[in-house]
Length: 288
Image (cartoon, rainbow, N blue to C red; front, side):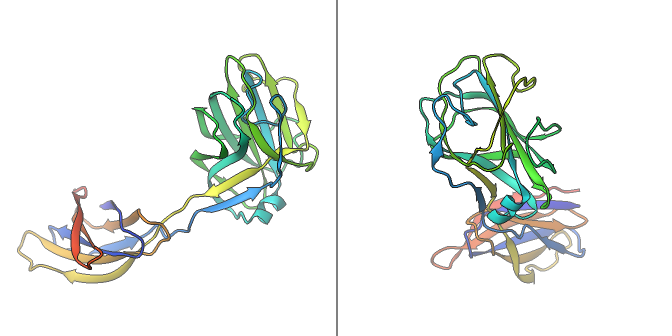
């Protein structure tokens, strides 16, 4: 069966994983999770901001609730450096909190679309974040998506954000850029319940909040050396020792998968600054 071993190795250090098998069987090792550093793709560098009661304002609570749909065109996404694949974070840049409140049931939905202007509400979006009660913060508000969104690399992307409070405060002031194109942003704000689910009359703007799409920093682990059997076969246990190296750009998480007909026990060791080997984790994989 397959078991997964998640370990922590400092960048560019090497460690040893001792695998204890209770049968003499072929050992197959899959080294996976070869990945890239975090990548940020920003669309919009405007220095304008919305007012305390002005829109677009994705974190705007001058009314009980506010719903926005924002359109990003393929050529803009490509120009930012984004390529087809998963998006793990998304957010807007707040210039001034302006005594804004916690936004209840704040969510983000996304969709690949061929729409060129938001002349009507887009439907069938996928909720990728929330609903969560969210308090805006100064600077980039980067929401880690609960479900990564996959951009197909050719479509436009429409993003919907909405929240529902039972009272009003002020709009957080968010950096904007424009004018872009008619129908870049569609929004509704109001002092009534269920605004997110039942939008009525709306406004369409050519301005849009500065936006960041992120791909998370990920890590890699590589097989440095398969040392082989480290103990005589006693009829009950044989040990394989595998030297591994974190070849990723991060400073922690390494992932090693071992496939066998039996579960494995393992120990993890690493070099310290004195080039000595110390055990830093012991656990056992599932058996059966």
